[in-house]
Length: 274
Image (cartoon, rainbow, N blue to C red; front, top):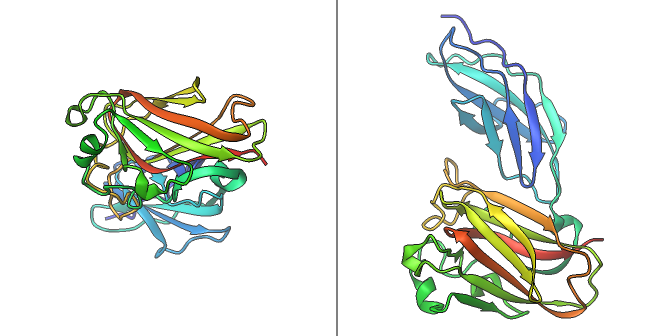
C-alpha cells in the first residue's frame, strides 16, 4: 500500500471568529479516508499533535479564533483507509479578522462571544419557558441588563412552539459619548435550517435588515458549540449602523426576528468606532 500524497493547494479565508480552509483533493489512489488539520498560534509550523479537526472533505472551518484577532499557522495531511498519514502540506500562516467587540469602544453588550450560550437565560434547553415569560413576544432589557436576563433563543415566525411570532428584544443602551459611526455585533452559536431575517431598529428607525444564515437547528438543546465534534453552525455578523443614529443618552435598540426560525445567542453588542 502506497503512502498518500502530500496535500497541496492549501488556501484560507479569514473571517470573524473563524478561518475557512480549503485544499486540493488528494484523489483516490490510494483511497483517502480523511484529512487531519493541525494548527498553532503564531508563525511556527504546527506539530502532528496539534490537531484542530478532521474531515472527509477538502475543506474545514476552524472556529475558536480569538475575536480580538490573532495569527494562526495551518498544515493539512491526508490519511488513507489503512491509517497511513501523508506528509503535511506546506504551512500557511494568516491573521484572523478582528471583531468590533475588540476594536471598538463598548456602548453595551450581552454575552461573551465565546461560542457558548450558557450565560443566557434558560440555556441550554429550557426554551419552552420563553413564550410563557414573554406571551406578547417582547423581551425588555434595561440598560443594566445582564446576559442572564435575556433568553438564549430569540424565536421567529417559523417557530410553532413560540406561537409563530416575530419576537423582539427591546434593549436600552446608554451612550454617554457615541461616535458618529457605530457597529453592531450579532454572534450566534446556531440558527435553524429555516434561516431568516433579523431587523435592527434604532430609536424607531429601521437601521438594518440582516439575512440570517441557515444553521443546524441544534442550539435549542445544546449551549456549547465549542465542544469537540459539535455539529452546531456558528455565525458572526457585524454591520456598520447609519451615521449618527446612536444619540448621546438613552437609545432603544430593537432586534426583531421578522422571518424564519430562532437564533441562539453567543453574544450581541453595540460599539463606537475608535
